[in-house]
Amino acid sequence: SVTLVFAVTMIKFTTSIKKINESIKRDAHAQIKDIANDLFRRIVTRNPVDTGFSSSNWNIGYAANFKTRGSKKSPPQIVNKLQNTKKIPSNMKSIHISNGVNYIEYLEQGTATQAPRQFVALSVAEIRAKHGS
Image 1: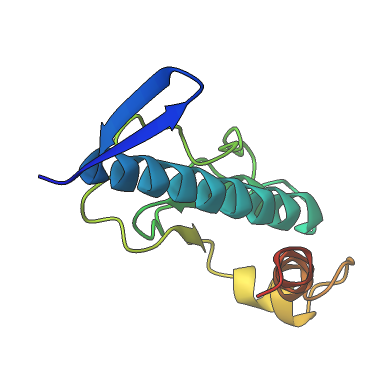
Image 2 (image 1 turned 30 degrees about the vertical axis):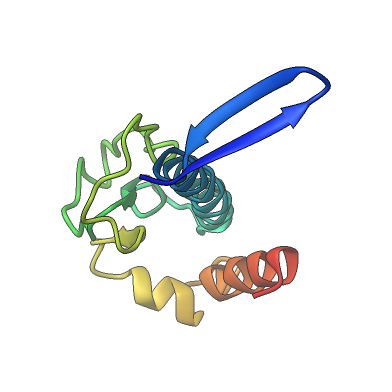
């Protein structure tokens, strides 16, 4: 085990490379979650609303979720964001924003009668511009 020692005016700080690496991973994961949550909020906010069924069926998580909840007459409550986790899932390779409503693609492509159109593409473009990707 490699140990780093930092001495600053009589104060010693000792930590292992493993702990530093874990800390960096946690910080990176927190930033990725913040970006994903920002994108999720933008998409849900821009989703055209008639009954609220499509906008309330957006999901965010470590796996795609195309299950729908509620109905057009009784849409479910919107999932607000990716839930905080103390431990990063070991199999976390990506964060998915998904929607299983069968007409969501038509809303995105602009065949719906209400604006905005291409709300997902616009939200992704804004996030890319904001975070430089």
